[in-house]
Structure formats: C-alpha cells, structure tokens
Image 1: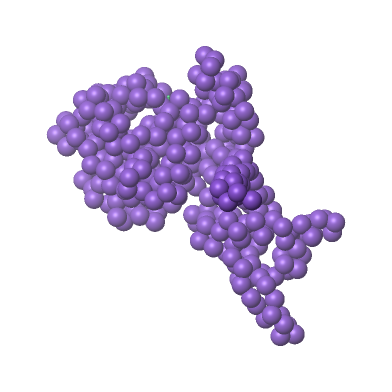
Image 2 (image 1 turned 60 degrees about the vertical axis):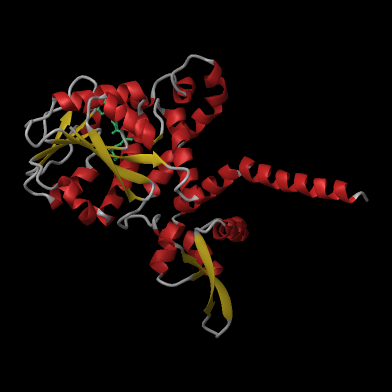
Length: 358
Ligand SMILES: C[S@@+](CC[C@H](N)C(=O)[O-])C[C@H]1O[C@@H](n2cnc3c(N)ncnc32)[C@H](O)[C@@H]1O
C-alpha cells in the first residue's frame, strides 16, 4: 500500500471523527437534560456516598425493560465529566463500581443553592431548540431572528403569551443570578456609597435580592417588562417597577444591567445607555452603569471558556437580536453613549463586571 495513501486515509478518518463528534454534540446536551429530568444528580447527592448501578436503577424507578440502558446513559455522562466512577465495598466485601458527583453535576442538584437545572431545562426547551432549524433560512430571509421565523413572534412576546415558558425562563435567569452569592463580598466596593440602584431588565429580581440584603441602606428597584415584575414580593429596600427601558428608566444613582445588553443590538444598547444618563438621580455621585455580561477574549481565555462564550453569541443570534462583544465592541458602545470610561473585571467565570463611568 502506498504509505502516503495510508497517511491521507488516517487524516480523513480523524476528520470524520471530528465531524461526527460535532454532528452529535446535541447528544451530550440532551443526555444531560435526561439526567436532570430523572433527577440523577439529586439521587446521588441524597445517597451521601457513591451509588452503584443497581442502587441507582432502584432509586430511578425506571421501567424494568429499560434498566439495562441506565448504564449506557451513565457511561456517556462519565465520559463527558458530569459523573465520576469509583469503587465501593458492598455488604459482602465485594468491590463494585459506583458513580459520584463531579463539580459540574453538583450544580444540578435540585433545591440546593447554586442549582443550574432550571437554566439547563430552559435553554434546552423545545421552543428554543426549534428555532435552530430556521437559522439557515434566516440568513437569506428578512425575519428579525430565527426564533421569530419559527414561532411568528419575538422571544419577549412569546414569553408574554406562554406563561409556562416564561416561568421557566424566569427560573433560569434566577438560578444564574443566584451564583452571584459566591462573589458578592468581592463585588462590594462596586456598590459601596450608592443610595439607589435600578436593576434594569432585572427579571424576577434574584440578583437585586442578594445585593439589597448586603446593602440595606441602598434602595433597589427592579425594572422590567410589566408581565415579568407583576405581583413579586417586595422588601423595605427592594421594589419592582414595570416599564419599557427604551421609553424611560426610573432615576437612580446607578444602573445595573445583568445579561441584558447581550440580548440587544448595538443601536438599542446605545439608546438604553443614553436613557441612563437622562435618569441619573444626583449629578454629583451618580450616573454609574454596572454591566454584568460576557466579554469575548479569544487570546486570553482558555479554549473551553471561549467556546462557551461563542455558543452564547450564537444563542443571542438565534433567539434575540443580540450578540456577545469583545472589549473593543463594548468600548465603542460606551463611548458612543457619551460615557467617559470603563473598567472591566472578570468576576464570574463566563461573565465580567464592566463599570461604566459618567
Ligand atoms: C436575559 S434576561 C436577564 C434577566 C436578569 N437581569 C438576570 O440576569 O437574571 C433579560 C431581561 O430583559 C428584560 N427586557 C427585555 N426587554 C425589555 C424592555 N424593553 N424593558 C425592560 N426590560 C426588558 C426581559 O424581560 C428579561 O428579564
């Protein structure tokens, strides 16, 4: 055999593996979704030690004809790092394989703090997944987003019309915000000295709830679309207000935008940033904007982190009119809206805090 041929062949087979891995990437996310639907992370957590396959099968209450398939699901999820395999001693001193949680599946334990299961279930909801089938056609058509091509309405109106989807999305955002409690002490200087803060597009207020508890003297207002903030429990220094940020924003010393700007195009972001300047409560110390969002940095970030950020960017293309931005792109928005400068601190893994100065 011509050795050159052989080498070319193996290169192509490697390319085939690479191609197939990416064709089937959805199997990784859908298998993880299945594990969450079955409550596997919670079962292992409650078991309080690594769980053997028979123990897991019993706890799952799967149909007897399906019990042989649990191993196959777990094998893939061990391979992708969501569970680990270890050995335990059974009652009759036999060594048996057992599954344990990894740091990633610890984030999927229902009802525990920092549980991202709602985020997973929302992002893998059929309403979002269906939109991806419209992406190719969207490039050539004139609909605003693939989501709109698929559903006939934009993402925000769809939420208003579908309360189940809306609630799931609200829980997803709240679960994401809850992770802030891990770094809230480090963020303290950013909020110190402010008398009032408006959390614009603050959803159901889980971020503001944490911040308002840490700063009891700061009045926090969560400002979002009326159907999002209706009937939510308030506290002494946490209030909710419905409205449209493109029309006007309630006055405050500072304005917080967590994962809001990435859902909108540049022109919309500049418009909203200018609204903040109009709404500054006290010209002396006010007017600061605090943005929590992704900053793409392909040179500095590790491969996996960049990949996750680029996935978010595509998601913003498919479901809304937004995008993820690199530092230059953030700078352009900030300066165009008339702010004098900014400081970026990468606080939250995927997300950074961008402090924007008047
Ligand atoms: C991606 S979510 C982020 C929610 C929240 N900041 C968080 O991180 O959990 C974007 C939010 O912007 C809100 N939003 C969209 N359009 C808006 C508008 N025109 N005025 C006010 N809020 C809006 C949505 O309802 C949603 O709660």
